[in-house]
Length: 135
Image: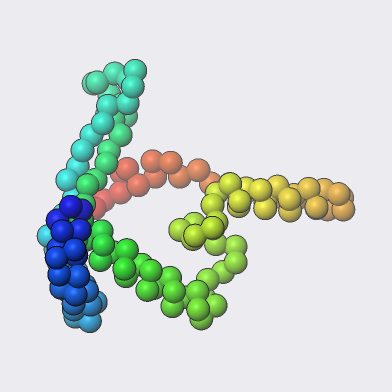
């Protein structure tokens, strides 16, 4: 990030041109997608167990900036056209799992007060992607 900041401070238009060119060409440099995997041992866990580690992928700063710019443009487009469902809480500013859970509980209480039946189906997919084939 220090390099990105230094370039921006010295020649701010250069990065703007670079990122706009990537967008216009629909090109995301492969080297900006290569992550460095770092494994952190969880406190008090057995070093021999694979589940004792938390994995973190460190991505190049240039790719993070381009990803953020593209994500903001897509979000703005979808939001300005009213294409985002109001019940979507994931990956949206100002909405969180806590707010979704609170809304769900309010809905359950409202139904219970009216003596209406309520059925909730929950799916826990923790670790679901651990064994997926990733060619």
